[in-house]
Image (tube, rainbow, N blue to C red; front, side, top):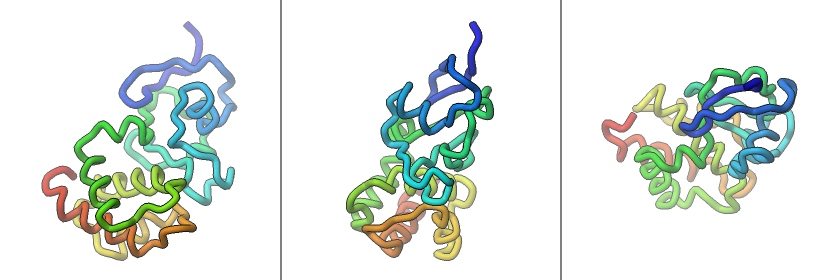
Length: 157
């Protein structure tokens, strides 16, 4: 069968559309992963962030052809993990969520950071989240949430 094969949230899928279609649009429209949102369309806001082979990427800047053979994780897949449970609890306890538009990208950015550096400094966290914009909560609560997740998630990352 022709098409672009990739793994989405642990399941192999085949996309039969154009290799030039944006990953963002395919994830939302074809696979109904609504945590991936269209914000700026330029890779500046992080609302469309996903993990591709464990690396945080803005799906609005990724053509489907580039997704061939990769593993893509959205919040829908990540929320089934123990790591998500730790981050979710930390975000809630730090009051780091208001409208929720940016939170899927923020959580995946936190996962990417903690996977790479399980004991980040505040500066590391701010840098790790720097590609994600939040207009409601402000960054201090989100930074606190990631710090708390790093402390609580002993051995997860």
